[in-house]
Length: 162
Image (cartoon, rainbow, N blue to C red; front, top):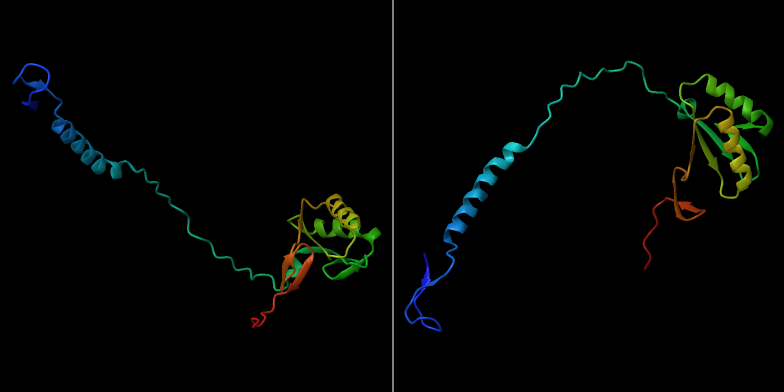
């Protein structure tokens, strides 16, 4: 118990009660140690037993054009499916036949920067009508990096300037 023996205002020489914080600090330190010891024990762990991975014997496809359907719209208005030129009237039927022979219904759409926007949207609608569930729009061509909207440049390294 702490008390003040100095004078000043009240009875001279009488004790003045003050709060002793030493037991409070002791209790807080003991609680801190208890929580530091118990906290790592409270971490929950999940144990998973996964089945072994089956190795497939099928080789990967050699040509990516055989596994993907890519519809291209050129700046001059020509339409291509996997590098084969197709008339717009035959596009719907050809895509329907291709989707009927496939498991996935994904078509990749690529339009050159100078292509007509309305024509590009119409071709995507035709692809959806032919059975494509997903129309993925290609934004960058291999070997090119877009600097700003609509202006691709070659990705070849250049020499630093002086």
